[in-house]
Length: 468
Image (cartoon, rainbow, N blue to C red; front, side):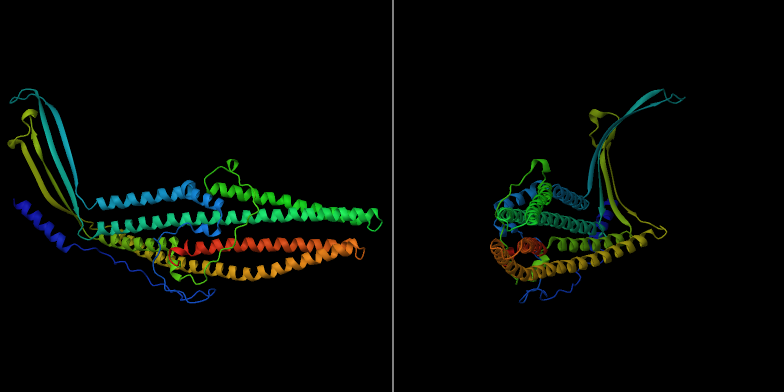
């Protein structure tokens, strides 16, 4: 009874004096600008939005094929499956650390037969000893080691969840950008097909003029050469298109040989992304949320390292029955029990514990720097895409004017050539200029579409979840 009273008193004292060693986590300050340098208008202060639903942000392009492909990314992409399995692993580790709060209870049944030799006092014989018992062990978390461990594992699990979301968002963005490039490439092929029709008409005109004695064999050869050059350019687009299709197949978890995307004449329109999206969207980014949670986990590990300096208090107990006659084993005379606390600590380790604490502190400092760098990188990516869209919009206007001017020049050159006023060299120059201007315009359009998907991704996904 004295032992029981002593143990209960010790447990009460432990529960009252229990504390969690190590620093309590506080999110480090990060310099956050009020406005983006490339944006117009004021931006609202950032607030955590990392767990808000991102939605089907790719629907801003109004393309049914893209919508269907994006859905398959979350289901079939193998990198996403890896990240999801890692998240489940982190959750299981958290459950294991939470289970350490509770006592461990076990049971044991045994039957041992022993043989002994005869002596002058006893005869030779065998003896059977039966036993049925239960045992329990409970580590009291006086110094908060278990709590800090659970805290670290909880933050790690949340970081793993955010990493999963970051991987999904990255795969969705890569798919959108690949698909948009593919559709611009299809439009490029369509433009080249129209150019081939026009160039074939020029070849026919040149041959007709040659038979009329107005043109020369060199003009005919040059016109055919121009036609074949455009045809070769169109064929060459097939290499880029095949690679984009294969990349899309990989993103949706399919073998490239079993996947195809037919050409279309529809290019998704450039979405009107609001220039006054609040800066709260930056903290909507899952990679920033993951870096912040990893920082919290590293902070908790300092407490785990500090708790290792102090002894561990464990309460153990055992109770059961033991006797030589199994049918009457469960009886008061055969009953036994034991209970008591145990303290275990390290007296000398050569500095291992100090080194482990220093390692935990250094890991936390590194995670702080990583978090701040991730935030800065996020701001840079948003600024980059905003700048790209702003500058490319200006370039698109200029390039559209260049296309119109080049087409006018080509029409004039063709009319003058048919009238015998200029040589075919003028037509060839005008054809080259028109083709170059058209391809440049499509290149700008492709870069604008890719930058738009990049901006939505840099902002963490669907902005309408925060700023309708």
